[in-house]
Amino acid sequence: MLRDGITGDWIGTFIGHKGAVWQTRLSSDATLAATGSADFSAKVWDASNGECLYTLQHSHIVRAVAFPPQPQPQLLATGGFEKRFRIFDLSRSSGSGSSSSSPTSPDSLGGSTLNGDNIPHDVPVPSYEIGSGVHGGTIKSIIWGSLNVLVTACDDKKLRWFDVRARSPVAEYDVQGIIGSCELNQLLPSAGGSGSVISVAAGKSVLFFDGLAPGQLLKSVKTPYETASVALHPDQTRFVTGGSGDTWVRVYDYDEEKELDVYKGHHGPIWSVSFSPDGNIYATGSEDGTIKLWKHCNEPYGLWK
Image (spheres, rainbow, N blue to C red):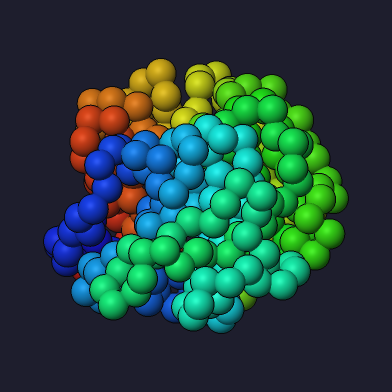
């Protein structure tokens, strides 16, 4: 489902999956949307009209999808219960369906097929696997922060950084708890640094990594409760967490690591938190079936006057 980020108004619904949708992503130019589902597939959609362009079949539940930080070439990374981390080359999917040359050749388990208008269903989508056999659990999140480096968050309590060109890990980090969320936070120019930070919620800790330096930990903050999600404000002064054992949203000071505010309103664990690009609002997604928008500025904004 696509909604307006300021008002929350419904824009459109993507219909086609036959199981729970575990993750959604927009491409860098917002023209494409990708979804990973419990129906053993990932789908790519036209974000403007809701048309399903590609259906990428898998052998198990797809928990994570990610687009690269540029619109071309059209690539999609997927991961999930298969414990396999793959990249699909959508830009090479048209034509006769013959195998593509390295590095984007169909993997040994067979290519996936397109599912869009006027496209033959037997045309394979070239794909290749990154870090074969490395993951010891479900891949829960994929971050594609720079062109050649991707990050996976896995149920084996490891974060891994991969070089696409070498198709192998270049850094690892062990966390102490089950990973609830792993997201890329784009910073405002005034915040300095590399321009992006990866935020991770794992057990009773939240961790922040440099978005461009593989494995470089910036900060680790202990919490007295289990965290399911975390998001960093674009100016790197605040971060917001969502609890897995309670239904509360908490706002922290990033530098002093102190809790500033607690907000109530959800009736289930909060599995996702995200700030708007300008940092004036943030959204929380809960197991209670609702998404809430919270104002994070003093001046009027959107529906908040």
